[in-house]
Length: 110
Image (tube, rainbow, N blue to C red; front, side, top):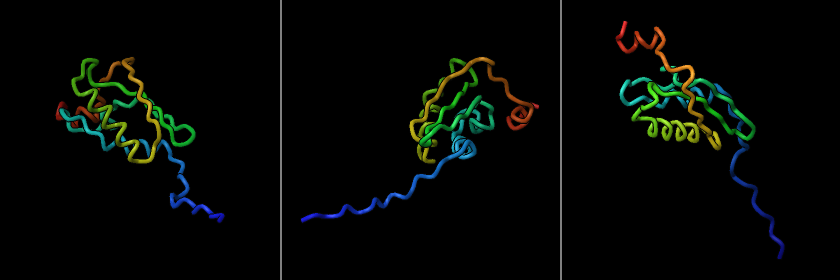
């Protein structure tokens, strides 16, 4: 007997935006500075591609950042939780990270 397959209950996939990626990245906190990677200015580029793939260019407060593996894992996890597929993270150290005046104020350095 012929049977029809049930239509997938999965809803139509929403196209995500750069703003969606930014909101997800704001959930990733630097464990030492207690500010998110977006506010800290560690994200140098965000590109949303087809099928909700995303490419991120980021830096760290120092090239020898001991929290780099944790930050990258958290960043990928938050992006995937937001619906992004295949997050690609590229590490960039040029220009070197320097806190903005706003971040200096948040950190109590001004």
